[in-house]
Image (cartoon, rainbow, N blue to C red; front, side, top):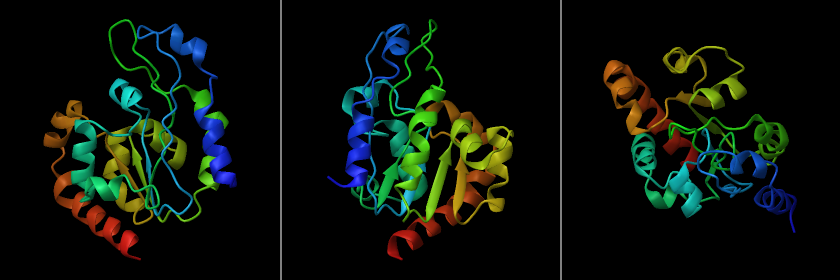
Length: 198
C-alpha cells in the first residue's frame, strides 16, 4: 500500500470525534469523506461536509456543489476526477447540528491531526481554492473576514483563490459583491483550465 493510500485509510478509520458528534443535535457517528489523490493539480479546501454529503460520501454533492462547479467551469466528471482535483475540507466529517439546526463549525482536532500530512501528500497541486473563513484563516494565516479576504484575491492569485462558500445562503452576498462574478470568476476559470491543461 502506498503512503497516500495508508494516509487515506487512517483518515477513513478516524473516530476521534465520535463522542463530540454523538452529543450534537444530529447525534450522528463519524463518517470521514476522503477525496484526494497524489497527482491532483487542483486542491479545493472547504469547511466540512454537510448532512447530505455525510450520507452520500460524495463531497459537494448538493446545490452548493453545482454552483461551485459553475464557478470553476468544470463538468461533474472533471470535478470528481481524484487524479486531477483533490477535495480536502478543514474537517473530514459532518460536525453536526446545534440546537437551532445550524451546522456546527469544523472541530479543530481534525485539522490539527490530519491537515499537515494531507498537504504534504499533495505535491502536484498548482492551484488551491480556499472556500470560506476556516480554510482561509488556516492557509493564509489571516484574521480578516471572508469578504475582505476574497476582495484581496489578486494578492493570492494565481496559486491561491479565496472564495465565499457557494451555498444558497450566500446569494445575497453575491448580489452585494458583483465584482466577484464579473472580475474574479473569469480569471479563476482561465486558471483552472490552464492548470488542468498544463
